[in-house]
Image (cartoon, rainbow, N blue to C red; front, side, top):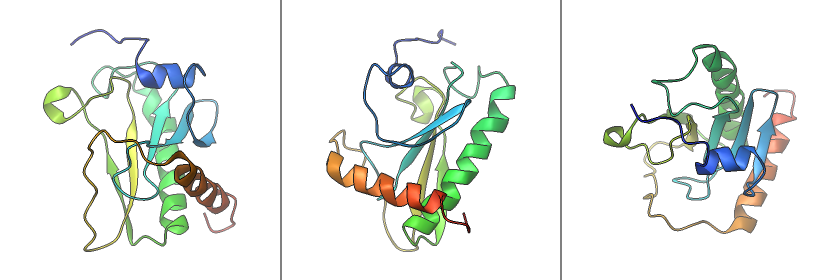
Length: 144
């Protein structure tokens, strides 16, 4: 397996070298809006610990990572009135991975709605910021 590249885009976001719209962070993880969302409320959950993907990550990383995935999953479901939540994680190019820092996609879903294509076109940042605020409000509500 290729080595972890500390100059990948998510590592740069974690270091503050590239801006991102954050919805949550703690000592082990950060959750940001996906800039090419496949649905409204699409969030990426990223561990701070460097690893290329699931295959080379320290197993200790997964506890905090998936605790945050659960917190964000509940929040996006509430914030967007979703019926469910899609959780995706890709490992290596053959499986669809294009950013080589472990991350998990959390996408609110409704039956019958198709996911938008991942075209490489960035979403409107003001819209993503508004969606982030919706998620933050859901995170702060007692039921989440």
